[in-house]
Length: 121
Image 1 (cartoon, one colour):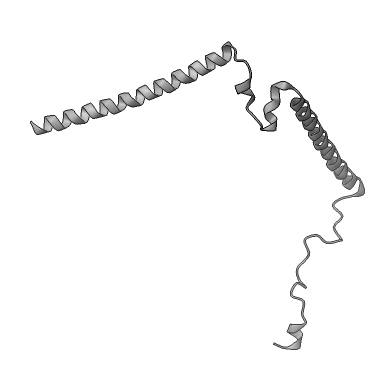
Image 2 (cartoon, one colour):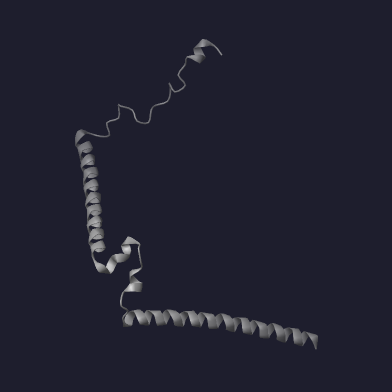
């Protein structure tokens, strides 16, 4: 390796990705882009403030005490007809699925037993 190669910049022919010569449009276009960024920032900040206000309001109400993570509110509240109906429907679906599984196992056993008996005789 000679001195010329040793002190040569390997990136001499590469243009930098963000050079100072790039203006990204005229001043009016740059101001418009900055205004767009500022507007989006204000929208996001407003949405975050709205979320925080709603969250604080919900923590203060008795219906949303489970936001603290200390207990489940649905276990502590009084049940009504809709809650009982939903629980009954869930129980009926579980029982129907269990009956279906037991029935399929029984039918499979009967068919397999019938096949073995018919093959033997």
